[in-house]
Length: 256
Ligand SMILES: [Zn+2]
Image (cartoon, rainbow, N blue to C red; front, top):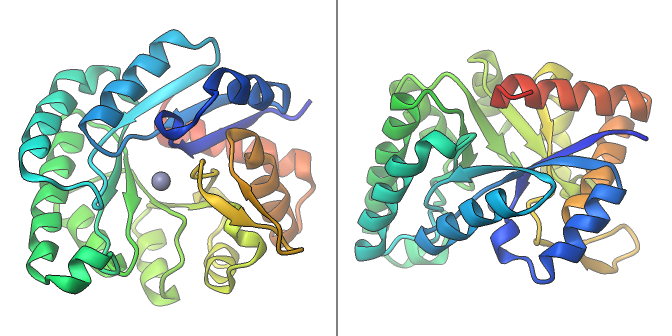
């Protein structure tokens, strides 16, 4: 059976996790990178990574949607204390299309400060970063570069192609999601990303619509769908694409 890795899953947000993990394992998903989004989520992700039988690699971080003053300091402390267990820092970044930022531009600076703080933790512990960059692609790239981040993945990249090229030329990665089935921006980005710089993921439990217009809540097993879409877009047999995606993930996250 084809072995798969989901490089971006919010396992802390999934109900009936035991069943979901069982189904994923049966679908060939042997490894899952579990990202976090705030203090409670970091705690839960760490706990999940210790207690479940599937290989779950935890990433800690504060998502740009989850910034609140008091919880933020507590979470930064948590991330520092537990960085030794982390495979990456994430999901972190900037989101200039987020409703709070549209209402109040000063929220941009708060996001940037927090992003910089987390990039410096990644640098200190030599960890890769998992980036959310919606509407803020250039600033996310510049901040990673300025903070001497060696390994970054721009998750679900759907931004401009000229910035994508800067990202790729600098040696950073891009990840594909099941949105490849319907999003022209995401398709264009993945078409322009060499196989060597690509990872696959689900961003589960995100709700996706398939080609026939029906929706589904993603689980890690749906990384098989992302693989299908990548193998089509890259015109590569599925088994070869899977092998390449696994190799890339091992290289990017530095695990075996
Ligand atoms: Zn996510």
